[in-house]
Image 1 (cartoon, rainbow, N blue to C red):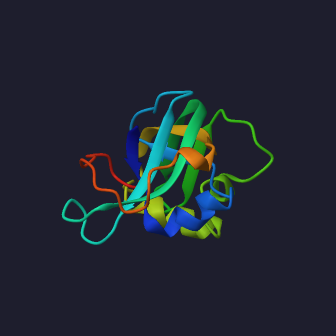
Image 2: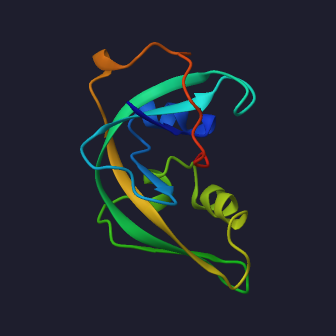
Length: 140
């Protein structure tokens, strides 16, 4: 099974179904099970802790901009009645803006991929803490 990292702060939001999108560098395959995990301790020096198997249903380009006056702007094509910070599992827009300020310099625009996913049937999930290879993709 393909594995992708998840920051541990988003674990419960994924399990509760509150986080059902993720923003990454490249799109994940649509319709194929992907195991989200986080590191048990130190990244790349500890076992993976499986969080949930998910299935991506679609993806869109997202532009994340930081204005010269330090405001964050997000442009994407996914339709949802919820705000992006809600689908991403953040408690507030401010929390999401603070997260992305670390990645985007003032006056800069970055392009990423916004993916929508849903939880896969949990009976097929490998046990928590199973060891596996590392993944170079940054967690979010």
